[in-house]
Amino acid sequence: MFTDMIIKKLPSKLTALFRISIYTIFALIMLCLLVDKGVSFYVRDKIFTSIDEIPPRAYALVLGTSKYIIGGKPNAYYEYRLAAAKELIDHQKVNYLLLSGDNRTVQYNEPRAMFRDLRKMGVSEASMFRDFAGFRTLDSVIRADKIFQVQAFTIVSQKFHCERALLIAKAHDIDAICFVAKQPELPLSTRIREVFARIKAVLDLILGVEPYFLGEPEPLPSPINKVN
Image (cartoon, rainbow, N blue to C red; front, side, top):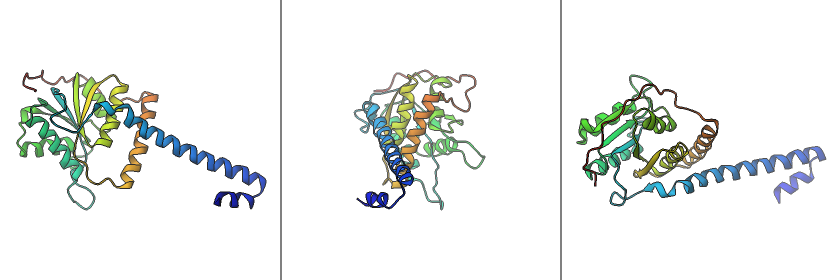
């Protein structure tokens, strides 16, 4: 093997160090893969791709993302999430949408953008509520439970993101399922980032990381008895 050829040419101390480095890298790669696949397996029964099969819930948590990507082009992830949210409303699978996202500047406001665009798509303003402190997935999921006091809800996002959100929900004993939004072709760079995002999510759960902001409860309206 190539590594064996290198090892033979190294002094004994460097050989030992080289072996340790190789084994460490291999172990880290395996750990990353284990976490990645483990998260998917752990929440597999909470994922729904069909509007006909997903159980009705009064509330849906729509996870925010940028409306545009670099260069000013429309972000397909954003558009597909809004389409999935509207589909839940149109099929009476949910009563209310909680639009959660980043609100870091006046110009960059994910909940506001989602609210405006869903309104243009025909969703009633009375059906939508905004969480301006959904800076991270962890914040959005926990705040839906603790601040907006949503007892059971449907998360709306792409599958890879849904799985991480559901991991957080299950770890906090939050009753959540996911309706998977259509997913554009997933670049390798995005897939790699998601692996590290899952590792960070696991570490956050181990360390007991809380949302940046909690505050006083702001309960959403009671469910309407019209979900199928």
